[in-house]
Length: 68
Image (tube, rainbow, N blue to C red; front, side, top):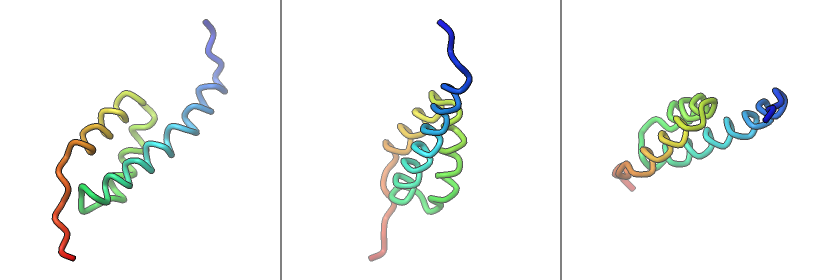
């Protein structure tokens, strides 16, 4: 099976922002630095398996206490 290089580019064009947005929304609830978490999630979107593990770890982490 041949995988075209443009297909991989299109896949990365979709996966990197997806992982960054998911990391940001989870990072807002679970950490005090959601921007840094979103950047790390976006970079891990280049390696989708690591990105999925990162999202899973964030999802399983406890929410931070809010002083509202």
